[in-house]
Length: 413
Image 1 (cartoon, rainbow, N blue to C red):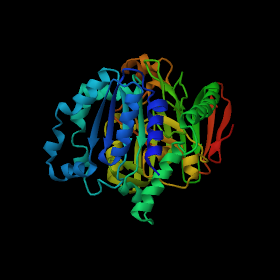
Image 2: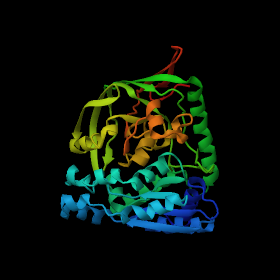
Image 3: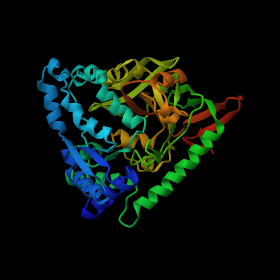
Image 4: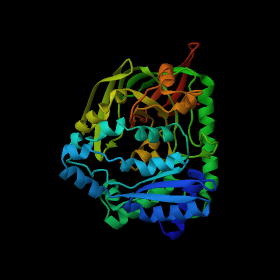
């Protein structure tokens, strides 16, 4: 449970192992008001570790829903310039970016996708928006996504419990997944954890795969080409300023860059996906030459359509991530209805923009150079989970050697 001591311990982990704040760095924090206790603890920890200044931008998803309910489409699409300026000004100063998620997975039920994404085109055309996305995805500075419980989220995860009991259980689950306990030193634990992840991606990098072939009994039969000169990564990363940081707490994945036009076959999702406050459940995608050409969902089809049709790049994948079926989060038996956690319980793919860091020299390339190397570009990046207990992944190297990468849902090496 998030008592004062555990809150301080969690905030310390976020500031030290997460963004790894250095003296006189500015910090920009985004949080829903339900995460107020953690936001305050993070601000305190940031100043104690030398932050120059800390700005906190609070949101209220209930009020956000009201905007989508009552504003006209034209008003929703009219995004004022000041909406970008605060965060963008901090990015230009080399700030650490901290996002605290604490939402209700069903908050936007009943709101049309047209209304939810009314302002996308204007946002994507704004150079400040694109620079902010690049700041994180190219690791120009340190950034992190973490979580804090809310009552609505807790009741979604544990509907059979009272609000108090559900909140307590979700609190404990978030801390456990983040490797924070009453008796451990989570900062030391994260050094060990990052080293374990490093061992896995070093093995994968040694093979230099040309492609990966995914199959399972659910109907997944998908071949993914990997870009030449790709890099598998995971856990701790290094920003352009040379500072080592952890962009996600929790994390269990190793990931790399697929070749944009080299994805073929069908993949079946194994967990629900929350997109824009709507749940997409029991869905599948079919790819031809990298592009999604067919898809369906038992629930949330309109949200899936909106996700795929965000722009041209969202029809292609930009990330391939491997997570053992026996990961701690999956073994907890908890479906979080939150991508930060559920993606670390399952192998996953991401529709949208690729991470330049997954290509040798990629962080120094222009977008044109990245595209020429096979990287996908989009204004969005959305992970969806495809791991299963019987998942098999066979890699093929450039010299034609086949290697069993995953067997029965877990690493085969």
